[in-house]
Image 1 (tube, rainbow over the protein chains, first blue to last red):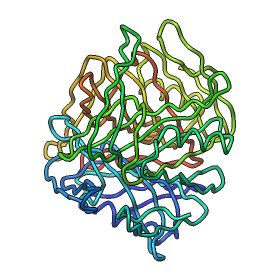
Image 2 (spheres, each protein chain N blue to C red):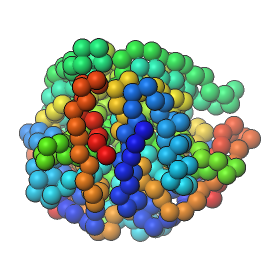
Image 3 (cartoon, rainbow over the protein chains, first blue to last red):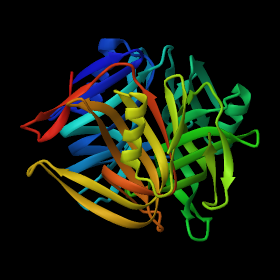
Length: 139
Length: 139
Length: 139
C-alpha cells in the first residue's frame, strides 16, 4: 500500500496480495484520519461480503473466490471506542459480468485497488444500538 | 435522521423506518444545500427503482420488498423551479447477494443508512427537456 | 457536454449521443485537471466493459446494447506519459433491473449522464507494471 496526500484527499494504491480493509485501517492510523469518505475500484481474487439479517441481528457472510472486478467500494471512516472503524459496502463483477454485492468484510487484491479517501476534519463516533443490533453513528 | 456538518461535508444517519429521499430533502432544506454530491450505503426493506424508457419517455418503476443492502447510492443535489431536486441511482443486494439497481425512487430504511453529502457552493438549476423527456442540468 | 465549476468541483452534463470517456477527457484537457475523483450516474444505449484476466494479463471486453441505467460510475483521473488517464469502473442495470458491471471502456449516452469531478490539486502519474500487466499509480 502506498499513497499521496493532497490537501484533504488521499490517493491510495493497494497492491497485489494485500487485504483492502486492513490496508485502509493502516493508512487511517498512520495519517490520523478520524472521519472520512471512501470511494474505490479494483480487482480481487477473494472477497467476503455479508447481508445483515434484521431479524436475527447477525451478518450472514459468504466468501467468493475467482477473478473479480470491484465495480464500486463506497463508505466511511469513523471511530468506535477510540479505534478506527471502516464501514464499506461493495459491488463486484465476475467473468460473466454479473454483479454481486453487500456489506464489505474483506478482499485480497489480485492486480490493483485504487481508493480515494476524503479526510473530514472532525470526529464522529459509533455506539452499539441494542434494538438495531449494529454500531450506529452517534452525534 | 441526524447529521453533523464539518466544513462542506455532512455525515448523515437515516434511521430505521425513515424514507431516504425525503430525509435527504429535509436536510437540504434545513441546511440550504442548493448543490452537492451524494454518496451512501445502508440497509432497507422496501425499495422502489425505475428504468427510463427513452422511447416512451417514461419511467417503468418496480417495488421490491425483502432484506436488502444498499451497496451504493450515488448522485447529486440541484434545484428545479426553486425546489430541492435529488437525483440518485442505486445498487442493492438481496439474500442471494444478487445486485439489482436503477434510478432511485425511494426506500425505507430497515437498520441504518449512512450518507455523505458534499455541499458545493453554487447553484445549478434543471429544466425539462422536451426531446429527452427528462429534467436536465441547465448551465 | 457542458459543465459548471464551483471551487474544486465540476458538475458535468454529458448529452445524448456523446461518449462518456472522451467527454471526460475533453473536460480534463480544457480545465487542466491532472488528478481527481469521478462519480457519476446516467443512461446509455451502448456500453463496453471489461474484466482483467490476471493470468493472460489482458482485458476480456464485452459490448452491450439496449436500454441501460448507469447505476454507478466510480474512479479517478491521473496522468500517464503526460496524457490524461481516466480509470473508471461501472455498474449498469437493464430492463429487468439486473446489474452488470466491470472495468469501464466506453458508453454512449442515451438520455443524460451526470458526473461530479473533484479536482485534486497535485499530480499523480502511472507506470506500466510488467508483473501485473497494468498501468499502476506511481508515487
